[in-house]
Image (cartoon, rainbow, N blue to C red; front, side):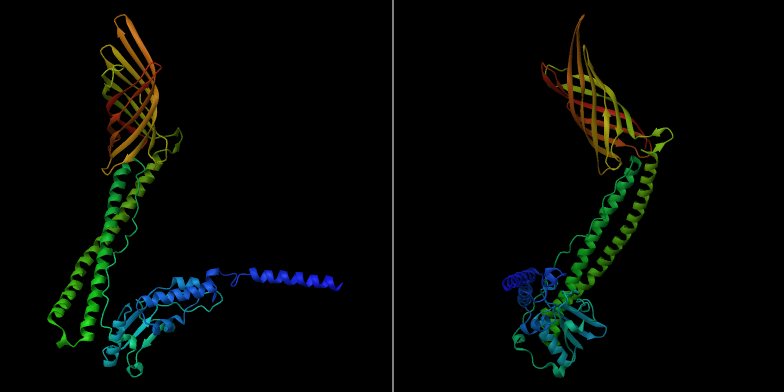
Length: 463
């Protein structure tokens, strides 16, 4: 009996210990939000090394990192550099990436009364680890009211004390590098639902392209101006914080004057670029509204069910051209025919079923083509102009007479074709040309091909 109880206790203890072993330390939170585990401690050390590598001294990094939520997720969201904010007055301040040079100058200015205070902070977004108290959102460098819990504030010259050892003999300043801004998202490409709307869609898409270029230009000019202003500000700080007016060399004074001009000049260009963006934004809104109204009208006419059934959209044309033989199995011939196209895909996918019978004649030879095929259109930048590719399969018959005698040959027909078509916007007419047409005839005796050019004109129905 005692042995059985002992075995039961051992079994229960084993199950409990196994459950503890597999239990997640911060369930139901994600593993990356666990506080104080090995991965979190490693992430903390990696982030500390990144901040030190950016030039921040140990005394600042350790103070600011002592307040961070110590889990992998929050540490991965934090930036790899500190910032410094110089407060001239309640309404005048500026912030930038921390450097020991700027901290040393800020200490000097605070002692001499040139500035009201300065702050060093680690601009982090709101982040909460598992089972930790959520802290207020940390303001970024562009906000004056910084979170005191995330900021080292220096506003009293009496308690500032001597400069730390890590700031002495540090006369260098790192000038900011210009970073090209990312391209803005494109407004997108719109399509006309029928030929009447193609011209409107082309105009709308041109405005969209112009707006995108204008936005790119404005973003670039804005980034350049910010960079120039920041560069000028740092140079000014280097000159006026570190030197008296009499000690500034003439070449540095000229550079500062040039910097001020570089800051002021882009303002007019930037204003014009912003005006272009605003103007094109309004034009695009009007073009979108006009195209939407046009496309809605197209939908009421084409592929809509009426009392007499469906009204499809397509065209009927007459063709005239010529066939040029590659060998003796074919003759050079004058060709004429009929081209009918019927839309079979949705309005935004211009695909057509094609029926294109034609006849080639010359002296005593006649060739009859009866093909069916499929055609797909490609819109071109010119309003109303369309390129297309076509593939046809069908029957071809060759008939040659020699006095009272005649010869006939029946073949399978394969014809890859391509060309251009122009649809008039205000009238339901079109003109076009099959510029590349290679009829290939296959029969038991031979395979032959020719080159054909066909011009055509006709009318459009159902739009």
